[in-house]
Length: 485
Image (cartoon, rainbow, N blue to C red; front, side, top):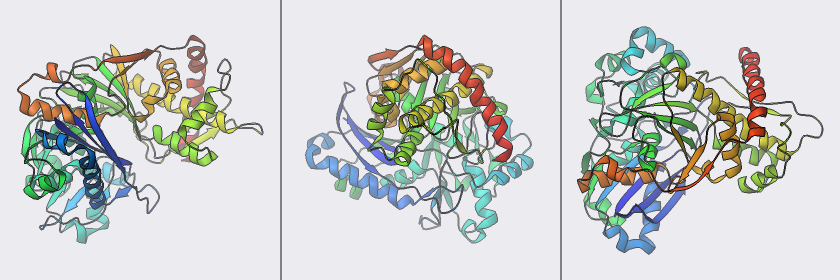
């Protein structure tokens, strides 16, 4: 048995995976995001630990025998968050999250200080990344910055409490702007540019390497033995391991809080000018490219609450009753938290355009589903421009449950989408697989195989024709409005 932990933005998920890749038990707990000012997004690291602890203890109630059989633990988590610790390992301030947009000015400062930063990191400096967050803290909270002894990513703070070790993996660390991504090591030049040194950083490991063992008190509380804890991965890389996207030209779409279009590579292929993310994979000698939209399934949750629908499922049912033979009159820009790929614009805003007196809730819901799909299509274009080869696309994340959204996405992208067993679990499944890799002596091909296909969704010819025209409207709307954001 293997325990997979995923620290998401809106909640944590824990699964127990057996040697046959079957999920034997799972639990989840929600986490709140704080937005104390416009563009800010923060969480209390203490809340992550309380949620994980509660989730595993809830598993323990009915699955004590399974937990006792767990032989290794893997951790996946939301990327980029800045968790700042003092000399006593106490948290200095709330963690600044991946979808926080406060530090655009610090991004510019960082690239001025290191003119070849894009060559080192493979990425353009974006407000969501970790390094500019530290520059912001140094400028606006100097008394906090002066006390910083360690900087950890969110999942690695959990690791510290679980094992007492300061460690991280390559895939998560690649999203900090402190990693030399081609050479898979910390860059002293990038660290120095933010007033930090190697001493502030955790030790680096590949995703399937063991970073420590559970502390006795943690193992006892969770009903586990003192088993190894592996490095794990950033949520997207771990999700890729979970559904077998480990070889060149394989891709996935993740419909979580954010939206990710992920392509695996066997070499380092950066395209920072297109705002493409180029990171290490959580597997040795492997990299990946990503286009990232900051609001995906979160847009559906937002419009559900905005329009007073009972829940997302009910709204999706209402949308499905619409006549899709005619184009939607409403266009939606899904930039509720700014945007990364391809715009790199933290000030971008969400917009409904084309409403009239008879516009109803279902039409707004349809516009949201289509707007997210058009944003993914923008991301696909810059990935292809960066030299990505895409042979097949698997869909993962909570949004993968909607076949309607799948048809919309397939039609906007002009590609068939594949749905696999375990796809809705995502990163937790991959984290458990990385734990298995660490202790089983099996190969990546054996452990991280593509999951069983449950179904496929092909483009709809009627929608393809609609979306070719609607994509142009979508792109022109952003270009027209961007100076006003």
